[in-house]
Length: 470
Image (tube, rainbow, N blue to C red; front, side, top):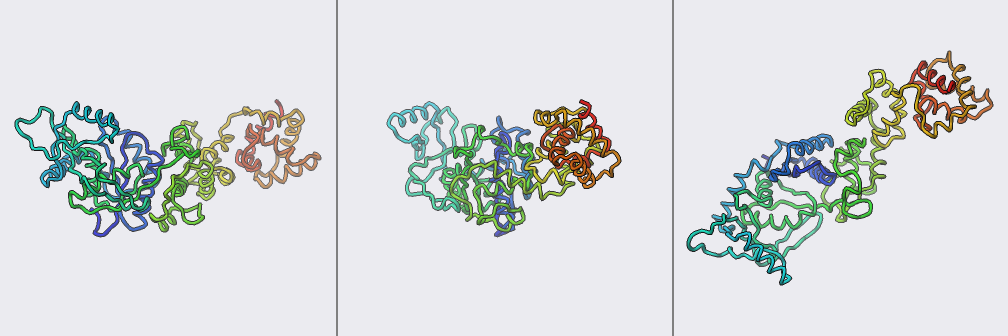
């Protein structure tokens, strides 16, 4: 239980798939607000859809949260396990006269909706069992339990993001709390769980705004305290349309496998709809210090992959080289790339300062380091092939001979190559570019003298001989 007066937020995903990027942002905002206020952040798995809720989906959510570093307070709450408590509240509402049995059959309800549709009326339950006394034997169909919702006036949600939102009660019908088989509906379960968990602030997508009005009616009927609401605009794609698969990665695990860092993703997700002046780079400790609900925008935020790359590139450059090396090894394993030997891992660590300077993702680091594990003779890409003309290959043969007795450091190698180019009457680039192609098989790589130092004398000179002799 939370301490008296403590702010409590929650993230309550349905485990029907992966952790969606929109859900990850919602979780982050809840986590930041709780940490900013010294409150508690709770996690609830809304697993009442037994056909679609799977252990694999639950694990994917937990893994996504852990990868993002969004730790929750207390145990994970599983909604399905609390069904008896939900039913007990529905029964209490009936005792209060705030809920009732409805015996309308599916055929009757279908006829009701068909008639409303034909008359161009809103499709809503008409309250036929609201104040009806059951005379004689009960109908064969088992009843549902419906809330006796207010029929006049308004239900008002004072939302921290959307402002004051009003719903006419005459368009909010008597919705179902318990189905005919006795299972609680989402609308009831959410309210009971939030109350029992002590949730004070509900921060979620604005697709739940209408739900807030219905849930408030249950809360009022029970005499429970109202939570504070903050409904976030949904994420849109770069084109301004609602985010969908055609816009690219949807699940947080996809961003992980694309080589983004957790700290980069946290910063990026924070900037999707929340701002602090012109600040773009906001480390997590500063985000906790600054976060508030008032700075959440009302307009939908657009996914911007260039901005994500830019932000992530900042965190890659700032990352510890040892940690980044281990992250690259983990990503390679996850993607099924060939494992590096211990010596190759040491080489990766040695060149990491050069690799990370231009990389925006861990995948770019891995690709930039591919020369370490490439086997001889190297396969050359098209641009590398063009760089290795017959004259360039003959020059590489002479360069290899000139470097044979050199002390093997990047600085000494660079000085020697510059002296060789001058002696050849050539520009440094005319020597360095074919040299790069011979050593990596590509026209683009980390600084070529760092590449040579990383490969070591024997391997680097062997690669030069391969191309000189080709």
